[in-house]
Image (cartoon, rainbow, N blue to C red; front, side, top):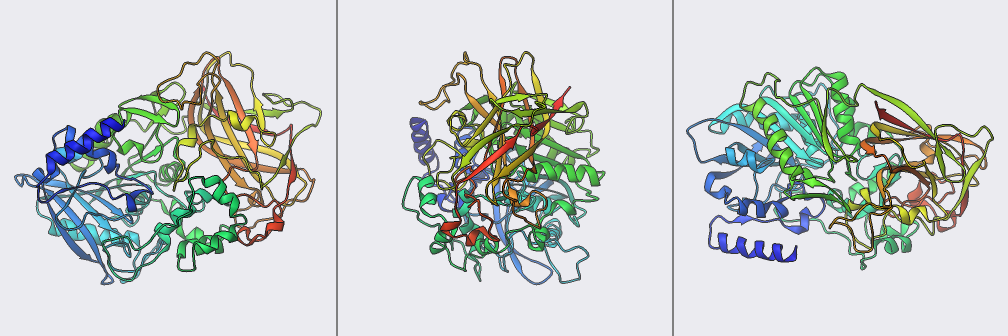
Length: 640
């Protein structure tokens, strides 16, 4: 891999030395968080295909005025061939539409096919970010029935499209929007009060609600994203072309130990002041209050007119809630063309060009992302922006990759209609059974927040963990503070196609607890390794995580009205896990793990109830014994 990268860098240098304007490669300083366009990996594809956008496009930078007078920096790449008209494909982003000036982006648009066949590609810095004017508002709330000068991201998108279709030469007055992660949120936003010229929208790994995506999951703070608050938390008062924020230097490559040394969370305050607006918002709004509710976009997705294609990765650690619920909300409340695609990808993998699709240690196949770009994404945009736009795309309603059989399958709806709910009960002696023992029993474990269960065996520092979504869970199953429940070896295939509901009945000696549930595919002993497996691991008896989720127990009855546990009182805790499409093959086993720490992906719960965990004292962190009763069950959506 090192040789290939070195050769590529040399080839890039030889190919483009002396060219003006030059091809822009990624600036690691600002793009480390997301790598949304995959430019650091895409450049080799551009070179290998001998396609240089400089030769085929012209670049223009403009400041487009919004209805309130604020001007947004917009970069327009137009095909040099002016003999025909083209659609406009636009991405609005908080991550910068750099490079500014004469330099070109290495890749234009959603994928290389749409770039090479010719489209007008537009990038815009959203209000208050980078080279745009105005004040930034993280997940800006949507305003229905706006007055003339009121604005939100919907009006900014509308005003931008209005300017583009009337001022950019050779456009066919048809516009598509797209984006991954936060740009995916802005793509979703374009659907609200949409401009008549907006015909096709593809929100991808789109944030739907920051209380359930990225930084918070069901009330639990994703501590591993703490450094990333720098990106969104620091404001600026004028347009800039260079980063105005910095990331805290934690002085170690061992993230687990760093966060252990900085418990309670108040010890992290020395790294951020009140000028990190986003971190202050997280610390202040610790329930699903009006602040968070206003910033959610899912509830506004009604009567959508443009065609939509929602895209996500089944192993996306950042944004699973958003794309699944965006699709389902549009499907329920609109009558537009609406499709969904989920592949064996981590965050944004589908926009990259890796030949082998691998998440963690698990190989899923070759050319999966390229196939999506060529045969699905390009077909979607071309149909609605260039072709008949009658909805007869030839694409299925739902294109889903089975992560157990490693094959694509098509469905007329998602979840599929031919499914049934099946429950497996968590029994003593590590058994997962379809029937519960009539005698009441418990499985107990001692949870120590000062010795939390790691979310991964790897020693690392990073902004956003991804690989762990398919990690081997043997290390956890062998810990005394992780309960393991397992079926016998399966005599037939079982395919899960939809969401999962953990219906726990629990008690604790304390007044607070987190509940983490993992669904795991246990491989047979004779499973052979692939070249992708870490040196210290084997696929023999590998415990592949298929899905996991956390619920901060105080929110078991309401995300808005937290409440403590009554010590030693049996209590129902229901935890929804996002959809999966996975076949547990004959010869495998289904395993469920239950634990109360998943560190430092999730911050450690002190296990003593405090109103605001960010204000917890060291003395609040106490060992507690948790019990899971044998009438607890995991409810699967099973494909028939």
